[in-house]
Amino acid sequence: MDAGQTDWSHEKNPLFWNEVARLDIEHNLKRRENTRTARNVIFFLGDGMGTSTITAGRIRKGRVLGQSGEDFITEMEQFSHLGLAKTTLRYCTDHQTADSAATATACFCGVKAPLGTVGLDGRASRKNCLSSHDTQVESILDWAQKLGKHHRFACIPKFQHDFDA
Image (cartoon, rainbow, N blue to C red):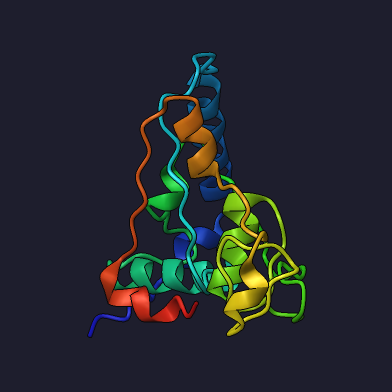
């Protein structure tokens, strides 16, 4: 297998980096602010996709393509607008590290939830159906529907097993 670029001698020359910076600045100066209202929002909730995992994926893909790896730009990083949210700050009411279910509830409903529950507030308990009465919370999909917006929810079947609620 090709491990990628092995000669980085051109990067030792400061003129190389000056040119890279000049081109980057030139590209950014040509960009114009988009003042239009967004028609669509795509929300990816990638379980286990922390910055270190994204970086490792970028390096691997770049090297497979014969580049240095660290400089490779992923498709996701090419979006004109991109936001990353850290979910390790207790998106779960009863555990330090949240699972996919509690994280999805926090991201899509705006409230923390117990581990293993989806769309329920902190009063519910996992594996206790009776505790879920009157604990349902509205999600961004509910809000969109009330506003007459079209909305979709998709889950990649290959990874559905990770959604443990």
